[in-house]
Image (tube, rainbow, N blue to C red):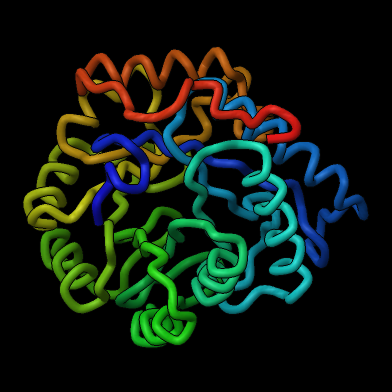
Amino acid sequence: MDLKQIFKTSTPVIGVVHLLPLPTSPRWSGSLKAVIDRAEQEAAALAAGGVDGLIVENFFDAPFTKEQVDPAVVSAMSLVVQRVMNLVMLPVGINVLRNDARSALAIAACTGAKFIRVNVLTGVMATDQGLIEGQAHQILRYRRELGCDIKILADVLVKHARPLGAPNLTTAVRETIERGLADGVILSGWATGSPPNLEDLELATDAAKGVPVFIGSGADWENIPSLIQFANGVIVSSSLKRHGKIEQPVDPIRVSRFVESVRRCTSEAPEQTPRSSVKVHGQ
């Protein structure tokens, strides 16, 4: 996976757009306009703050299904992603929670998104949705059927879950890449807002042997200088919200502060157009 080709930098900061509850979700408000408006606001704030990419996910649809989501969720996410992509000039990814990689690929293929996140690509994890089994064989074949080159970023020993058995982290990383054919791997802490430890990041990066490793949770402008030493990129959300609270909107000042912290550590400026990355109406 060539990070510079997709993100115009070798150390991308990927901001998360957390969608308000979607149709069929227990907390669905009945207004898709409200979902779209909030997504556009968050995407614009993240782009203005300088992130290198976005990932759109149905975060507020909890409690999640462990398998395929309702078609209404796929339809709604496709509409929202298209609106976001019309607004900002950034590569966009998709995460359909809890683990519907097939729907994520379908949305990405139809909207032109560049990558998806898959919580469980290989192995078996015990989660609050029950046992989730990786379906790498189905996902990779479906990608081929779609005729697309959408990149697959896969969590290793994903947060909010426990593996059956006690797999070695190095082995889990290698199997996700070598047997699951992931294009990149993601390492998180134990829960949303919890960072991975440095030792695990270093082990994962060594095991990945050049395949990109992303920090998947818990990064903020204070700990990112340490974390980014052992990773190729970061997916960030909670610390970019107002007051650092996940339910709040994105704060552009927090975004800028985080991105500047990453840039100082990597001594790299992204090779792309001016950093607003928000399209002017009519473009």
